[in-house]
Image (cartoon, rainbow, N blue to C red; front, side, top):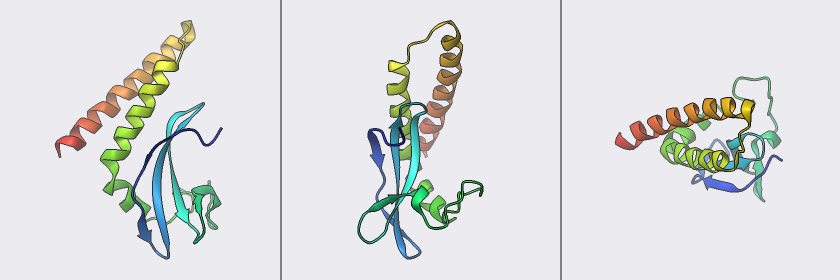
Length: 122
């Protein structure tokens, strides 16, 4: 499932000839994920539908200036990722092997909390 519950949507930003936004959504397998969307003049389209999309490119063939959008709303994006990950951890049922994975992901969550705290303090 690519599209789960939308946790956060950034305000849109004009980049080149198109408006873009960043979304954080809940993915069944990966927890909280980000994606970019662009306005084609009629509706919002996912980044994978961008004409120059290339998953083998370092920025997936998307406009390099999307990083400005990301950094402008980084604090909100991280807060949404954290919320999504907490929701994901809550429903994760650890087994013997799963507990190790759960603890590894819990460490990631703590690192994310630390980064969010630094962003909030800035």
